[in-house]
Structure formats: structure tokens, C-alpha cells
Image (cartoon, rainbow, N blue to C red; front, side, top):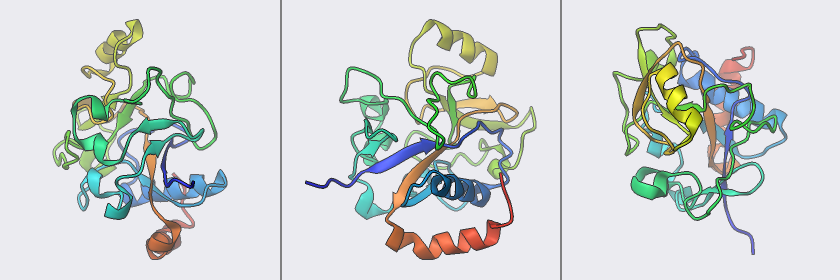
Length: 215
């Protein structure tokens, strides 16, 4: 029996808070997904001025499991991400932690391309925008500007040291609400947001606007 699922994938390199704005990051997710041979519509897992992060995935798809590139479950459903507690922790139904991979199939948990296992998102625990803490709408890498991000490391000897170095708190939850300097280079995630048919018009507009640009 076929089961609908949504894939969560990282961009191929970490980025500072200056990502060129949300549309440019959305286009990077689209472009890298196509380069990896993935169909579906991928959008940046980032809050923006115009959208709460929990609204990125359209309502018909919010009950689907979130998986990594290898088909391993990361979250039971999209909605679970925003309920807090253990539901927002990585792979809540499993004893082992399943890893997140980039579009070029690198494991962000153990690859040196991502020295900090921290994810930009710019949202509160329920997905609401943090207008004072999302790196000036993802256009600033100023050391004094702050952005909300989450450490992917719940508890390990290295996690405490990493939090001291980057300025954040505890981790393990994808929507942990810690503030970091926007000069840091952190993981940027993309989520498979809708079916190709539903989003075809949106994709066409973004691609046309950024077809000559890269991130």
C-alpha cells in the first residue's frame, strides 16, 4: 500500500543569516532538489514575514510522516513538529536517532561541512514568526543581529561545548527557541511541502524570478 510521505532534506552547505531573503532560499531548495533528481516541491524550513513556519506545508499534507532521504521517519507527522514535548524531537517513535541528509547525500550529523549541528528556523515553538530574531528577514549576517535556531544535539559531551561556542541553549528539538548571532553558518533545511500539481504555479514564478541566480 502506497503511503504519502514528506521528505526533509538539508541544503548542501551551511549558510549565515544572510541568505538573500526567503524567496532565494526557496529557490535553492527547488534547484538542489531537481539536481538530486527529486520530484515534488521543496521549500525552505524558515519563518518569514509573510508566512508562519507551520503553514509551509498545505493542510492536506500535514498528517503525513516526515522522512529523510533514506525513507527513515524523522517525525510522525508535520503537525507533531508544533505540538511541543517529545513529538518535536527527532524520530520520537524510534529508539535510535535517524539522520538528516543533504541533497548531495551527506549526513549533516557527522559531516565536517556542518561543524555546528544547528538549524536556522526563525520561529517560536508553535511555528509563529519571531520578527525580531530572524536575521532581518534572512538578509543579515551582522554579528550583532540575532536569529532563532535549534541545536540538533540533545545531550552529548560535544553539545555543551558547541552551545558555549555559538551562544545557544539546549537542543534535540527542531523548534528549540535559542538565539544566535546571524554571522554563524548553520544548517538550512528544506521540506517537501506540496504535491507537484498543487504547487506548479508557485514553482514556475519562483524559478522564473531566480533562474539566473544562485545561492
